[in-house]
Length: 478
Image (tube, rainbow, N blue to C red; front, side, top):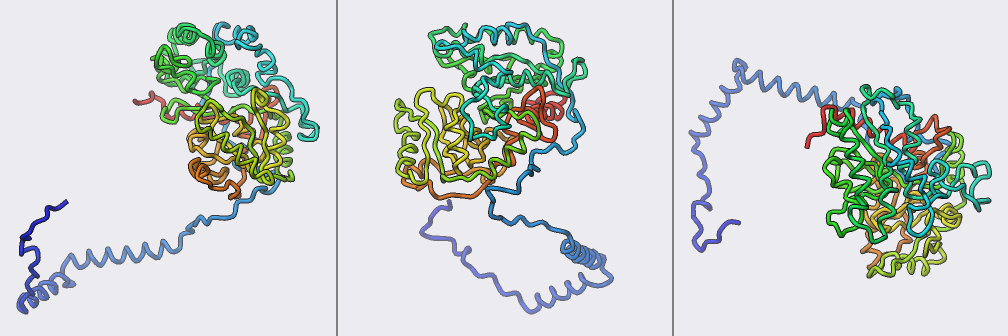
């Protein structure tokens, strides 16, 4: 800021003197000499002007594409999924992946002792069928009959098992580690720490499996070659379950262990500020066996007669002050002519129910507040049903699943800031959108059959990891 003065300088306000006529004539004469046809600067200026004219005419002839906003259709033409179909990429274009054969202590024994993974009940049923869980029942009339075998009651914390089973059969798996671009560590870290999260266990209990795993990996020659930057792992819980910074805090300290620093981590919820965290979709109940399953399901959700404007599946959090879920529940009950509620108090919706699926299939929009953390499995249950998610926190999806969802949030979702709802904004204000074309990228196909013309969530994740490793050959630079 300039200082204020009572006696400003008079020079600042003096008008410039008008040039004398002689001065003007002299200036004109010098200009005549400057623009003489014999002066080299004249031809330089003429050439520059000529080039600008030519560029102008050339620009007018270019086919310029202008993006004009259009009304988004909820039900695009059936049986088209251009955003997710395989586009003739050469097989293993980004390299091959080597899968470590870990001691059973780090994976198979955890599954074998499934009745001890949870302090309240056995998890054996949820870990069957390659991690997909028990086959779904009670879906008659909700799911087409010939698609029933593709539906399971899948737990949200089983990506470690799903990825391990799939990668063992991946066409780009190599048994020659020296030829690999990336190295996969099939450690079931989520299962290992899960049994210690809710009981009074020591930090040593919560860190035991992780510390032993990293000691084992450190002794492998291909780890030492790169210090781990070309290694990756699936962690089957949210990132915050592995980020304990104090002994008395929640979870494991696995991610903060020094040897984890360069490892790419696939998680159902990532830390948006950590490059090595990659968000992957929560598992849903739909596990297609073939391309035909995907196309039939897309057709089913496109042509579904949706009778409800929006829905909310969830439970209140009574222990949380000013619980936003409770606000949404009351809002929905007050708009009962346009909103459908599925009360998930207790564990009634833990692995999905026919009521949730039917509610989402019948609704144009589904309300998706944050869960116990910023994300929730219901986001993907909603989108798989062809319903449009309504978010109230940007971190719920927009900073999480960049490899799987469109870069423009408005093309598949609606965002209403939670404070606007608290201040009385009506959720009935609706934006049209569609998400059906992205269904293949949000589901995990059966490993024994698999998709041919589409890439599912597993394929997209592995391609992304291999692409990342290929682009970083020589090591990630901190």
